[in-house]
Image (cartoon, rainbow over all chains, first blue to last red; front, side, top):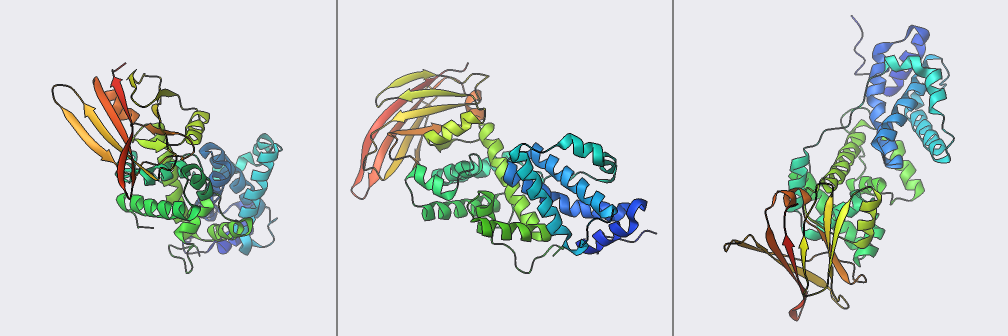
Length: 188
Length: 191
């Protein structure tokens, strides 16, 4: 009976993958991927603002990570999270510089793709969210749209609406609290 | 920190600041280090991200009305939205519609805003045969330097509506009371 890997921390999983080497510890790899993939995807979304590019980044970074672990090239498995973050930063930087070579990477690590699983974002009830947005005060709704549709910072929203940045952040915080409560989550 | 709890969770306001790029580089790096080591805070950032993407989709789908600014209108067009535009001076009336290939329509109400602190919109929707709905929208957001109030009706709802007349009166509100700024009339026909 295979060992349940769920209770293991990230470093223990990384050590198991490294110890297995070419024999491949599929359970440990799948669990580590399940944990780290959402973090890489969110990093990609934050810095690339494109769900497809973020998913691409996630897959590339996790493939490289698993491959390095298997090859025993990651010297400090206990720092696996920092390593993945560093890889994300490097890939985003290269994407921005236009020096990223996805095709080369896939040729190098393509075999690893079979070992990994997809990481899908949470689903959201669009109709319910629309109703919750509609229920906000006019100014709150505008601030939400400026913030999340147009990626405006509090300072930028403030400048456009003739408000103080502090006032915008208060409106934003209140609106997010109402939205999350309306959607059934915790208030901010 | 790989479980469902975190001993020192990142404040939600900080997560929002991170997501919209408001944090200084050093603070941003701290947040990212924490997120990559913490399943709990990853989950909370995921929730924020899903909400953010949901707001984007709601705007694109015309799911709700929203008051906007000219730079926001420009952003919408830069992101590929096709937006039909109606520009009205005070007292004007316009024949209007929304077509199948429009993602949204925007009304740009020209209005003197110098010294104005708050604008309310008194709306009247006349479907004919005496069926009139009235509504007051308080504290409509506006750019005080722009000389106009911009708003997008809910495109999804507008597409379903039969011919009607929609009137908007903008009023300035302050401690002394309120004064009219302009009245605008939209005669809508389905496309």
